[in-house]
Length: 177
Length: 128
Image 1 (cartoon, each protein chain N blue to C red):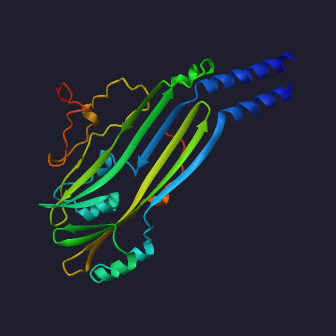
Image 2: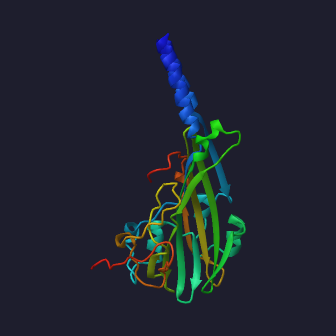
Image 3: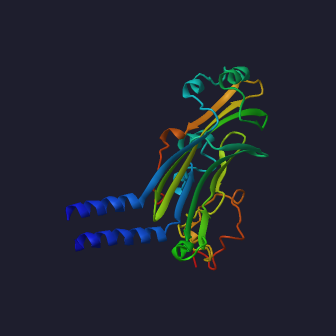
């Protein structure tokens, strides 16, 4: 009889703990397959043709014209969202439905661009944005992590690489110092 | 005693597993590989491409050439709704087809990829 009572108490305790922390959400959205620098290491500007790029990476998401040829863009996306509602902890003791929500969304948007000349030979290639995977954590007050030098993908020219003055700051020291 | 344990286990499972959800969304018509295979470089005309695939989703002018772009998006979402945590993962992939036409309106090149074939419902948001 006592054991059954303990079991029932344990169930209610587990249910209470579970209900009190209800409101935690972890969501992830991915668009296409991420392309890493290693996946594009085969591209040699001036030698690799656009057909070879397509054979390895598939069709791009968009092709646009430029003065010197075409720009093919491969887009991929990795969104991480996490949320905790601490208001649920006091819900049993208040007549209202309180909310104290911490949430954070990290957009690891990346695009890989290939610039080809009029003969469809790659002249430049590079990642449009820094290649950082956002972490899962709902704490919204922490500043975004600074890109480490080894996390920045190589690019063959400054034509495509974008400069980010906000979000990811420049490192305070040079990688080879 | 055994009955109590069974009841305990059942209640824990029921209380922790609130439900799960499968959702799906698509944008655009599927571009059939057989139809794409009938397009021949150097012979198929613009009119034949339009007859086979319909009007393009996007029309581009590329250094004197016309490019017809057809695309389709497929999204699959899996949600595991627990009392303690809710896990959701949404996977989106696209099929893209580019038909490049020369100045005479003849197909010069066809670039296509079908990524949606391997798209699966996933629940676990961590990892790759």
